[in-house]
Image (tube, rainbow, N blue to C red; front, top):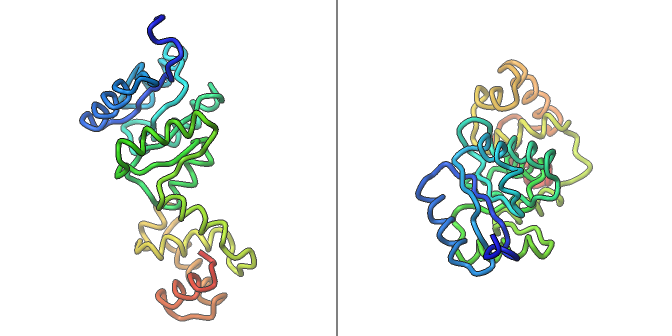
Length: 211
């Protein structure tokens, strides 16, 4: 244990064996870090949380069992001082914001370089909140949205999903509402924006910074 003194203790939660293995090697090759454990699911990581006592957790989002977002919530409830850095393929706005609201310290996508991952971990240790460039832009755009929107928060959500090409059925499943409710929201969106088509609604909402 003495050899590990002063090193940043890191746990990896990633269900892809190859990616997880590459992260372990990368961290253990760095003189400042030590990967003390790696798991392919959140449940095991949470069970071993007290014994592992990590400083930082690298967390995937799409995991078997409970999701990375739910895992972040549970870990932060148990150990608020642990920094959780998401490293995932997901870059959809809703997932990003859910992860950050759950307590993630930073948000990286898996196309980052090994060097950038090392830099991000150092940023976290220095009090930063690292994000991949596309994620940072997404967050900034959200702050730049108009605060004078005629749409309700639910209508805004529906229109955001619509702008990503999702069908009424997919939107209903995503928001836990039925398809007829989605149709009603879209009808209201059209009326409020004074448009008559999906394309026109998306164009106007984008131009007016409503989504």
